[in-house]
Length: 185
Image (cartoon, rainbow, N blue to C red; front, top):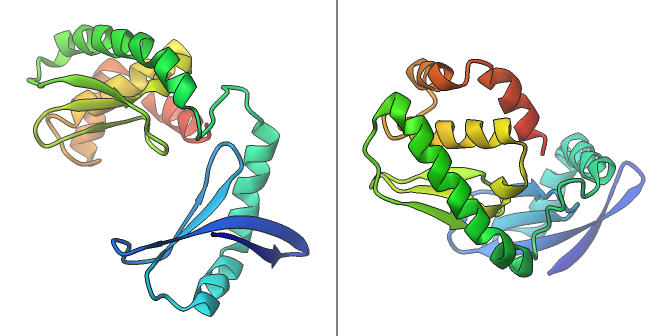
């Protein structure tokens, strides 16, 4: 349901989602500039708005960033057509890069798949499946390398411990710099 709130003299529109699976409030600003608030069912509306006001600096900063950034990588959330167009290219890229980097690590993995993920570049399941967003096909190569290596390393370390980052550094020594940049996309 669409709602509007005033934050620091700015009228901000957001979408309120009620979820029976949600355990807490969640704010998300997507690269297309949309602002979504997810709340547990039965959560008092006044508490939701109070929380948004408390996080006004963060919300306005993220919305401003999305606005300034525009659509330089043409990321959009309603991109079924784009997903279908880029899925095979992304799968080929992910498969090739995974094989290439796994020569360094020699980890066992099951399958590589491409998803229409909204908030993640990739994920690794406990079953050893590597999943990547189709949007990796739109990234510069060094960012793709980072995403692939990041998920590969989760096969060995299913966390972000120092051991995990040491594994990443074996293939991507400048991972810290790339990580900062990719998080801003």
